[in-house]
Amino acid sequence: MSSTSAFFTRKRDELVPAPHARGPWSPDMLHGRLLGGLAARALEERHAEPGLHFARLTVDLFRNSPMLPVTVETSLIRDGRRIRVADAVISTDQGVIARASAVLLRQGEEPDGERSIVTPAWDEPVPTEPPQVQPGGWIPPFDLWRAAPWGAPGPARVWMREKFPLVDDEPLTPFVRAALAADFASPLSNAQPDGLRFINADYTLTLARLPEDEFVGVEGTGHVSAGGVATGQVTVHDTAGPIGFCTVTAIANRVAMGTGR
Image (cartoon, rainbow, N blue to C red; front, side, top):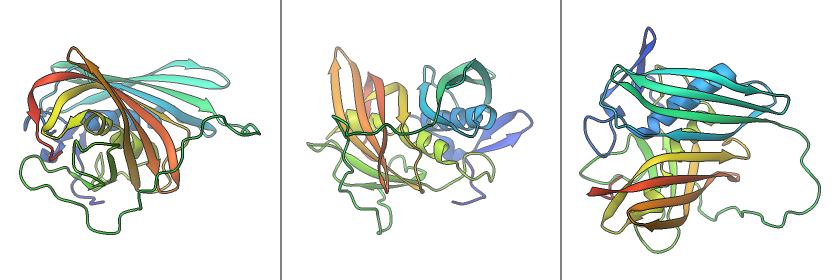
């Protein structure tokens, strides 16, 4: 990752976005994936503890935000022997733009015996070629490898790898890396051949374990929509196998986004 092109720069209590923090829907709008990453970063920084695992992160993206400095505040909601719950609120000077909730669970001994349902490792090889570049439109500020064209029949699959730090020159933690990748559940589960016609309102990432390296794989495994409201699901992988799932809800958007996302 480049240490000179972070998405945000810390200035006092605010995080100031760089130009490449914009999203694909509008050149003057912050990308929702970065808000999830900032929430994960703050929750981990302030509420992590050895032996407690970030098992769930829900990010509500209920307000489009222009490219303004943001602040992230967190609060501890519940702190028990086996479970900890913490919330985050992300704001600009125009008000609250997103919120998040994390559940941390105490790790322990894995139960014996076979499971009735086991998610298999996918057969998508780890990328060895340079990342794909889609000419024109919004260029993703991360490395992306697609296994099939957007909207093609069957499960959509991508490998992702971050190129830039999130804040200043801080290394990305595995939890933040997973939170950033999870937002891609929306285009993978909701895209069609002529573009993406749904914009997601949230995403919920569940993790049995954290990614072991810089590659995160996302596989679209479900989509249901009716009346302009959609829900989608993906399986999240690393190079060792599946690590969790992500679900999104989305609303139909009048203008479709091109498949260069």
